[in-house]
Length: 385
Image (cartoon, rainbow, N blue to C red; front, side, top):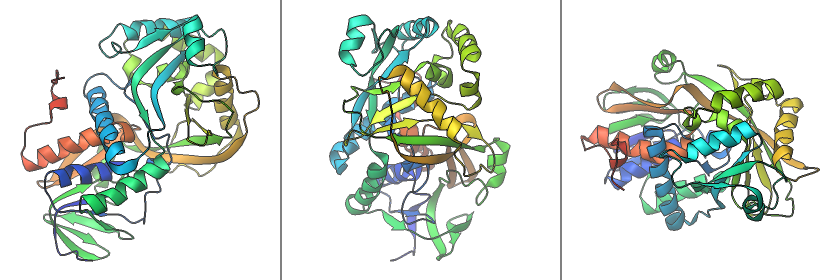
């Protein structure tokens, strides 16, 4: 395996690194991806595999999500990645939540969404609890099985795009035109560092300046319930969590009611996402606890609160947990950032938990910047349709 030199060396093989490998290879560059692991084992495979558009922060993040969703759809066909589910049901458990989704549906971001109530909601989603006030249906979302999709994407990049993977190797430092690694120095015209939760090894001062910390979250897999969800499901708590709803006039009233009724859920940073796998099992989460050194433990009471929120939305009397795990991702005040510590080096990190949803678009921006190309169309305030 030659490490004599590359046009573009990418540090990190999570979804952000793989997205940059794709963007660089599409520019005709000779690309290598280096990582200390033999395969992705972090946030990229510990999540829902949910490419979320509706609810993303207005502006560039929302446009990035739309562009990344389109790239995911194209890759799914090329790579052979099954799309497990399409769309999102944002469930309103309270009248205040119904008001929020009604207001959102009247915005530009909600223009393709539909409000569902009564029989229309029951007909679309039989597993839902009865007498729910309503739901917002978004057609934009895709869901893949991340444990399968990420390795498939890496294998396809190696076979079809001629990307070189350098596993079990550590990058100690990045200098102009080269990376100092445990394999020895590797020359590269461009270097893109996508470190995920490793905030210390490379450019620690930039992460500190941007107030980046780590977020631990709880995830569960439940036994197949015997029915199929028509789309991914969220609940009222997601309206507080996702910045895309922040400007809805009714949001403060919803926040006040949830604070009075579910204060422990808010303290644990819980919001509900439930998606379904090909075998019928449900992937459910999650919670958010922030610390520069998160502990490895998964308290039962947090899981119980997640399951209680699930039970308030879905008719699932006795959920059987068949698997539990924690996720870990970088978190900061920005949804994502790109820095240029050296002229031909970029540090890229997604710090809002939206790596799967936005990384492909961010990667196109990074390559355009490095190569002196015009910004991609989605960067424009009003991109062409």
